[in-house]
Image 1 (cartoon, rainbow, N blue to C red):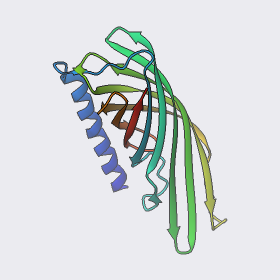
Image 2: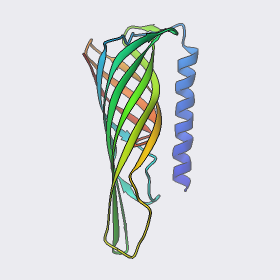
Image 3: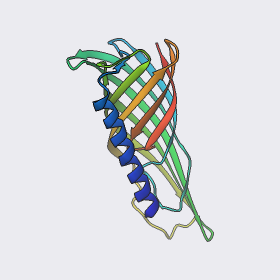
Image 4: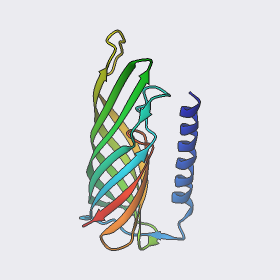
Length: 189
């Protein structure tokens, strides 16, 4: 239980620092995410809320997202809509007993992109995702019972992208789901 508490503490601190940056950096300005902007992210993530046992081994979380700028709103900012696909697996082995859980998550996301800063290469965003988690479960011991079902979920997220060119960048994102923290590459078109 201690490692889960440590992960939650790290996540809380990370969210605090991200919120601190978002609300105390108005003298720097962000690259604009405009209506009609399209971005694809491919990432790898660490930690996650689907943990089944503290001692289970786990794969990193893999995620792919797409979003498109839809509406300008006062504030200044843009609302985007998009899609999410994620995967994560766990395995637990103990005295000849083995269990495996694989989660495939699909979802729709809405995000607010803050355009009030003017750093040419930066996109700051946060939003919410409505998702369905498909669970695949297998075990070598049929005497063990549990309630392992696929479920609907709601996942908040916040992140930032840094673009090195007009089309290529990197991203970091905090969320609660397949991974607590994901990082990877972004392609804008």
